[in-house]
Length: 344
Figure 1 (cartoon, rainbow, N blue to C red):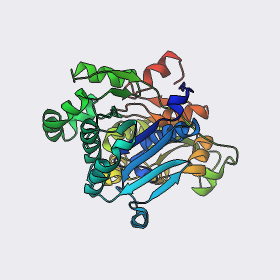
Figure 2 (figure 1 turned 45 degrees about the horizontal axis):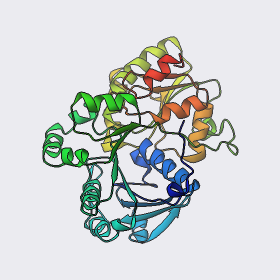
Figure 3 (figure 1 turned 60 degrees about the vertical axis):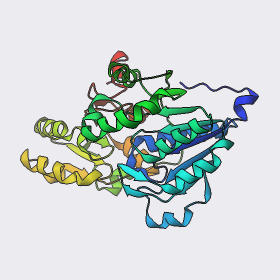
């Protein structure tokens, strides 16, 4: 559970949060929501929060917002034009905006590590003597580091280690994420573990809406996966496991709810064909948000997350909020707490 300081100095603090993508770039998954929820509740506590981000993964109509301040749940957000692709965004506009305005903030908070806006924020924070906090959000965990490992090693050697060394604080969401960081012997000044919270309003959502929308009869047992369709989520384990499940429970259907990351859906379809699973047994919904997401959690029978690496696991906490039994791997950040509480 998070606690907040209510003293006047903290309430009057001005925080600049720098992140490469932000709402409504939903395809980036859990961190998009947890970062915004943090900012939203800081604002509710009287803290002045501004977000500098880019238009990465946003639709073209977002160009109308570029360079202009908009408010999302009271959080001031400014989107800057960017270039590159989903895993790396460059923005000269955010660089010069930071140069000009960073002196007006008390604390700089960055999320992620492998993107240009974070480097720029650290650079200008140091130049102006401003303390900055880094939330790696799994960037430094062992398995994610194996993806594009050569580039990341170069990056760590030439740039990121210095950024980490000079941070006022490195924020982890789980003890396991922190342990991976220490085991790799990265430089650090001070660390803190603060869990993510959830913020869900279910008051206006009716049960069975999800089943009706996707034509799933009430008699069917829904096994729900909620997240990006990507290799790290462990579909090469999930699909063969589900093939065994339906041999014992013919009513089971597997719902894969999430965006198709780097066209990984094709790989999942190959696995479905390999294990000779009836296509009617697996439903791809695409990204679901808001009431659809809540309804999916309400209507499901079991939640699964077989990830190879997950620094926290927001979707697991959301599933447990709806009293769903959860089946997860030991690589999911919240796994030790699930095991300790015999909750999955």
